[in-house]
Image 1 (cartoon, rainbow, N blue to C red):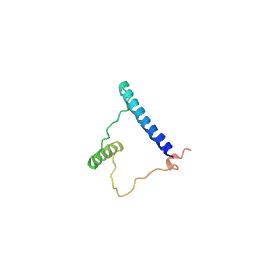
Image 2: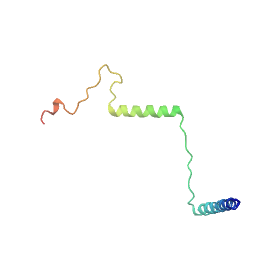
Image 3: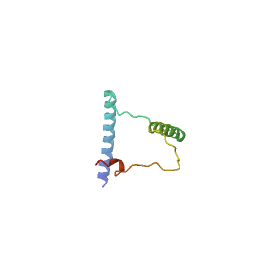
Image 4: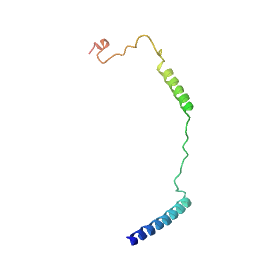
Length: 85
């Protein structure tokens, strides 16, 4: 078993050498992976963005009253307006 442990250690060292060689070669070629920094947005900014988007949609949809007394009538598939069928 001691021999197996030594082989594993040698392979790990060889793997590290190969990884270093790959890193060196890819940096010369310009193929190194680009890592972009993640930007975090604060909760207040998310709220402002959401409010602005809701305002945009309200403007597009015509913005009926938010809490009206009666619910708007939504025509179903079988409506009286389709009597020509």
